[in-house]
Length: 379
Image (cartoon, rainbow, N blue to C red; front, side):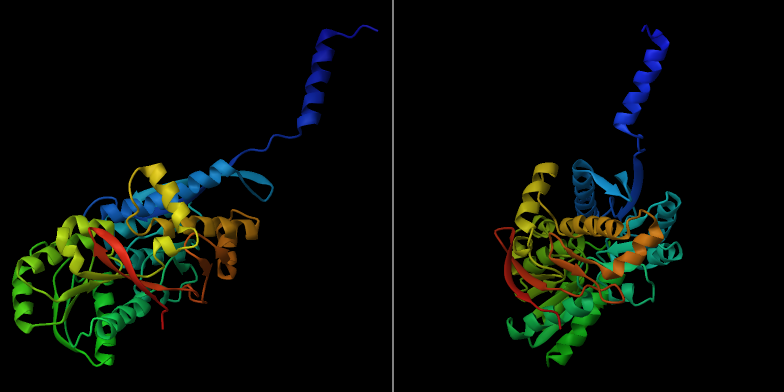
């Protein structure tokens, strides 16, 4: 029997449709990333964004299906310049972009004001902020990527007294939410350990000339000087201390504990002891392999926060999978029960969003490179 050509075409098309089934549209899900991409913290901010972007690229390459639908992740990266006002503007812009979660902001001074906007929109926020106030606001949306200053400050103080045998300590901070907060925690812990805080000075995060402060501190003959701030300020501070003949060890937190510090301080960096609110990269379960992937992708070393933001993206995706949804409210509802084994270690949360499992790492610098001195369990 002869079949009309057009009928054969219709039947053939129908058979193809039956074989292939309905075509499912690709859903694009946007995750925000807010970091200082300009200004004095740009190196750390770009490092943090790079970590998140690497995770997004890997997830998309492997293929992601949520609720039976193929999903493509999109990273919406914005510059908050580490500025509180800019951070709130950026946060509202990201909310308007319909993000389902935010990885950031990098620093406490940006994260805390921005957190109010994300909370009002039921958007998960995973931040590297270490100031305790970030998760003490009563928001169900705030989660951490690393330990807090309430853990880091006492650990650094314990090392200063127990290992460096400090009895007289001078404290300087850059007056930021992060720098002042860490300096406060350190000072309280130093006094509790029986050492004396001989002076307390505040500058600002744009200061590059510390010679007047350091000259006066030199006359106080401290055993240790604590600098609360970021590497952009700590580099000149450490270098000028050496130029003035100050022999006291200079200690600081994760804000100064970067590869950039050694570039800025030069050989004087060997006099620095700094802490990170997490494990050393080589001690992280997935650290060495992550380092290889990161350096292959970006052609530069990790500064500090890339592995934490990398894990944060995977934690959000894990919540999506457990919620079987890309809806932001359902992702948020799944977050408290997170138990994810990432590059940085096991990630699970206390009711307020703090990490359950943490470690504080203490470093120094040898020939311009970080060297792990010890790891301490937060108290």
